[in-house]
Length: 176
Image (tube, rainbow, N blue to C red; front, side):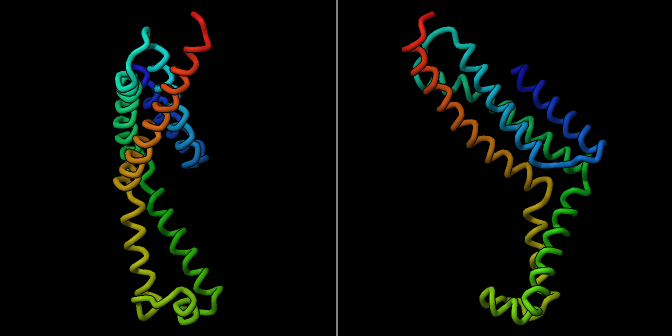
């Protein structure tokens, strides 16, 4: 459990330092989360001193992972709400700019509407406003934290199953 708390703190410090140095990449935060999740689950399964039943081992792997997931979800919300509040609006604007560029490249809104099926919006401004509203729901600190919660929970379950499988198979071949 302590390892989970320490790794959440390391993630938050690392992301904050990267922000201060002007090198902001969400990929690095995601990669760190995946790496830390693997480390936490590996250490939890490795620390089992006896060969338990499958579900007990699964619980042993998922318990510290769940602590990490809850804390990192909170850290993600805090990071995008207060430490880097301009990131999500910047993502929204870059997506709107990409849509505007696509509309211009296709020869205007009428050609764009023809190529992309029947659109509910009658003009370009209304279409872009609806897209902006959708992006605001998708790219917010709460949405990012919720997406992270779901994704990390699924990854933790998959990693726990893999680690238990490796442990069970490896136990047969390695003599202690």
